Amino acid sequence: MGGCVSGDLKGGKQAIGGVHGRPTMNNDAGYNEAIDHFFRVRDQSPLFTPIELSLSASNLRNLDILSKSDPMAVLYVKKMDGTLEELGRTEVILNCLNPTWIEKINVSYQFEIVQNLVFHVYDVDTKYYNMSVKALKLNEQDFLGEATCVLSEIVTKRNQSLTLNLHGKNGPGGSKNFGTLTVHAEESCLSRMAVEMKLRCSQLGNKDMFSKSDPFLRISRLTESGKYVPICKTEVINNNLNPVWRPLYLSMQQFGSKDNPLLIECFNFNSNGNHVLIGQLHKSVSELEKLHKERSGANLVFPTHRGREKVLKGQLFVDQFIGKEQFSFLDYISSGFELNFMVAVDFTASNGTPRNQDSLHYIDPSGRLNSYQKAIIEAGEVIQFYDSDRRFPAWGFGGRYGGTLSHCFNLNGTNAYEVEGVQGIMAAYANALHTVTLAGPTLFGPVINTAAQLASQATSNDITKYFVLLIITDGVLTDIEETMDALVRASDLPLSILIVGVGNADFKQMEVLDADDGCRLESSTGRVATRDIVQFVPMREVHSGQISAVQALLEELPDQFLTYNRSRNIKPLHS
Figure 1 (cartoon, one colour):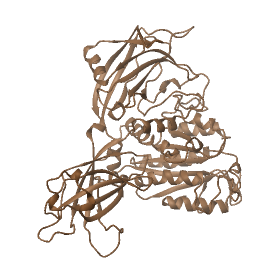
Figure 2 (cartoon, one colour):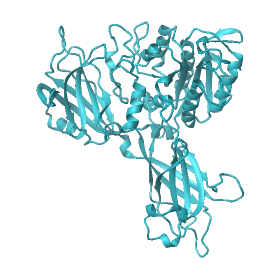
Figure 3 (tube, helix red, strand yellow):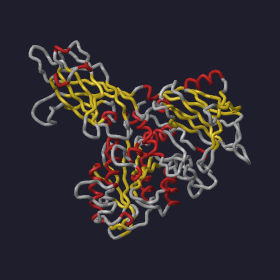
Figure 4 (cartoon, one colour):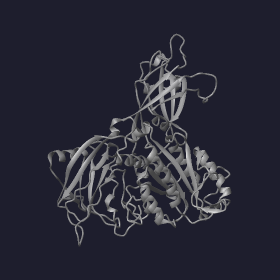
């Protein structure tokens, strides 16, 4: 999102598009990629993992006099406003208190949100046996019990199965035994499918005055609304009209289906972000596979003002096309891999005195959360399900702790840096506001290095741990070079860094750290980051309501996790 770090773009062009990742976009004034992507996917076609839930129950209550209950299960998702949206129903199993339903219920798993599931089990009256289950009125059936859980609780279990105690409509408790409900999740095999393609072009038009074009490809898919959403970019090939790009990977989650229309655009790279279109063409994955089989090229076209297309000399070739099944995020998680959540809070004076209502650290007696509290809650509530012990490292920086200025101190005021659960972070943060004096300047380096040290220790002992550091800040960095050095070193580690900007500061530096425009970070010694590990979003750009800044950040995490493990050929356990 920010401009390139180095003037000569050394290293930057190597990965303009994050070949393995989710959509990336060009830089426009005032543009934030994480937020833009978040809005776009929700408006048009969210990236999600299709999952099938299988249900069974044991020891259900018997409400029939002459026979046993005839149970059916109904699944709901609880929405943000507390209402229930029905997702599906099983079939009715006659005369059975220990049913195993055959009908599966489809759910769209989204990592970045907490998906609260509610299960209801009913005894269906005999007079409705000939009706479709969808036509059954639930208020005319006998209620056998209810169970609730979060979808993440199911998919993080080793066998992706979770057994829940059923209870009455008044909630858990009471002496009645309503039996149990077991939920098993299975990921659709389609979500694991991907294609690897090696693309090249020949005889491209030249768009530069004093040298040849610097071409790269951007691939977009057509959504139901008729708009194209970018899903992938290649690297830039310097000064070449016959470029051959490194192999790129597209997952079925990205392209939808092999027959879904794709727009492939070839651009000439410009360091200011205003890339010039060389030519384009429309091809589905199936058609690209056909080009490979026939060893033929497809001519690029250039759109004209009147909606017509000028056919160009330049052609696109598919030199390699491999369909493959790859391990998914859930394959790793359900085999025992974990996300370890860490948080670092900005205690610099620019936040304002915590006692004052206009302070970013003001704790509202009415319970209304400030931006720091919101970010901790929203990130922590999602990630906690992927961390088995729920002990989270929590630090502060930029404050006077025990009378001494510190840029990485334990948030809970003890020698132990870990706290218990998300509420432990919240309590430590609230308490620190009474014991820490706000100071400055704003330095990220010490906190990043501390988090990197934990991640480094894990790599030598336990490959199943991946670390996620949430930095919440209001300020402009004074150690930008040290921070970039720390991030480049950390790019080799199982670590992602989420930065949430609060308040009205100028966050241009943060956008430089988040290398979404393809310019990978470069250290002061000239070393280029092996991958982009930073995501930044300013809270102020996301309005209150259904859209969350933190969700915009979290959505990128599964891909960063996968990119790290795939690049090191780390496989799920027991695979």
